[in-house]
Length: 246
Image (cartoon, rainbow, N blue to C red; front, top):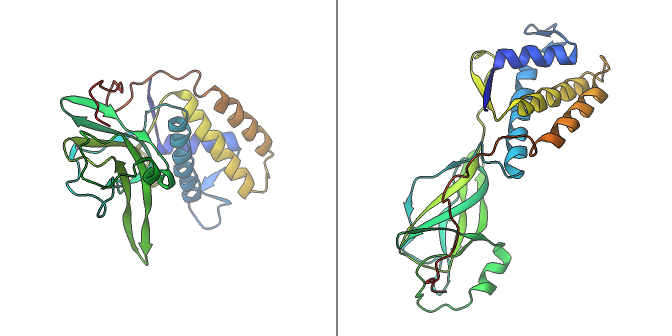
């Protein structure tokens, strides 16, 4: 079952595994704040590791929204929806139309127009595929979220996007704040990953680097084999209706 660990507990366990002493003053060889950053960074990687292996523990989804009422451009057979502003990666888009949920198939942007070439008025009842068109842009300090193309163009229905959100760091000063893990494997993977980072920064002064890599690899091999199954977000069934109008 899922479990939690506080920031303070993780700092303590990582320091013990690395055989180091953490400190907050400028003379400390290992700064508590630095290891706190390592913990947050490793937690991000751990989330992605689980999600890419097919487990949806860390996914969230957008609220139900109406399909766009206009095409991306004149004669195009696709419309554009916003990339969720906090999404690290997309994992599915579900459309609800005519009383049915359906999962859109993923396509590459470079092949989307060749698949849907006809530009006249669409008679499609719902979109069938999606393709990330832009991951966003930056201008000085301003980030603008990207766009996702969905095709063929259709206006009837609503959609939801399931995605992995960006993790917000927990500061070491918030020692009682919790990290959520799917199971003990995730917690152990994170701690050994942090030990590896500490040993790299310390030029392996305590001789823990090889051991940390070995333990991390051993645990990583088990992830996906010994974690409890969690029901996916979004629609339960992705079977297409025989009445689909392509």
